[in-house]
Length: 200
Image (cartoon, rainbow, N blue to C red; front, side, top):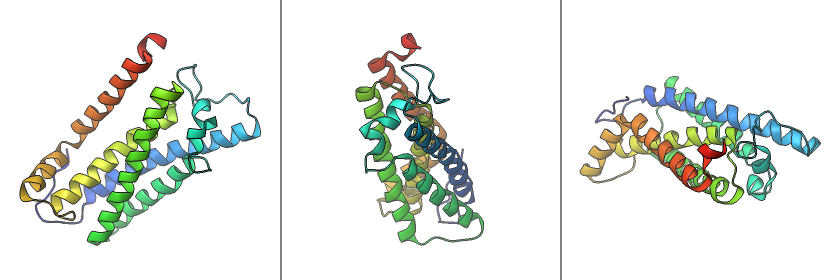
C-alpha cells in the first residue's frame, strides 16, 4: 500500500504506478487499434481476442460505440496512456508539477473514467459482449483516476476541508483494496445482467 505524506513531495511511488498502469493501458489500446485495422482490411477476420459470442473484441470494434467521436476509440487510449507514461517518467526524472497541472491531469482522468463507465454500460446492457482488451483498459483507468484523485485531495492540490483531506490520505493507502472493490462491483453487474458464468 502507498502512503501519502502530509506535505506535498515528489510522488515517486505514484509516478511508478502511473508508468505501469499507462503501459498496461497502452498495450491494450494498441492491440485494439491493430485489431481495428485488421477488421477494416477484412470485416470477416477472426481476431485472437474473440473467444465466444460473450467474450470478444469484434462486436465492440465494429459497433457505433467503438467509434464514438468518428474515429476508433482505441486511438484515444494510445494517446492518453502515452501522456500518462510521460508524466510518470518526468516525475521520476525530477520534475515537480504545478498545482494546475495536477488538476488538469485529474480532469483528464475523470473524463477517461466517465468514458469507461459509459463503455462498460454499453458492453453490458447494450452490446451484451465483453471485450478482453477493453476490460484491460477499464482495469487500468479505474485505479489511475483513484490514485491521482486521492493524491490531489490529500496534498491540497484540490482545496477541500481538512476532514476530506484526511479521508483522501487514508483512501490513498487503501488504493488496492478500493480498486478491487470497484472490479467486483463491475463483475457483479455483468453477472446479474449477462449471466456470464452460465454462458462461459
